[in-house]
Image 1 (spheres, rainbow, N blue to C red):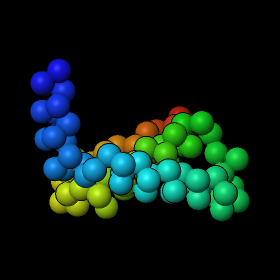
Image 2 (tube, rainbow, N blue to C red):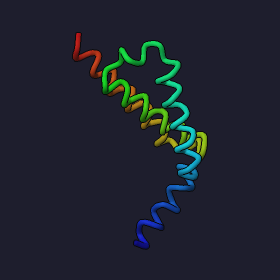
Image 3 (cartoon, helix red, strand yellow):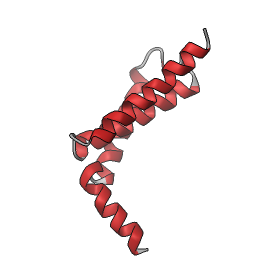
Length: 89
């Protein structure tokens, strides 16, 4: 159990407080669904990508904005949608 606590403490430094991240991410995800007039036209992978990007943005705004992995993760999720779109052509 000590390893988990240590990991959570370490991640809090880069990822921010989990409650803060969750609050921001859930607000963004709700806004996507409520205000996104084309949201229902998205594929499941596109929706999931946006959800994951919202979580990463929550980490950026709650934790260390200079943590390069946050930005790499966003790029990676976007690239997954690019692959999906290119495969569908």
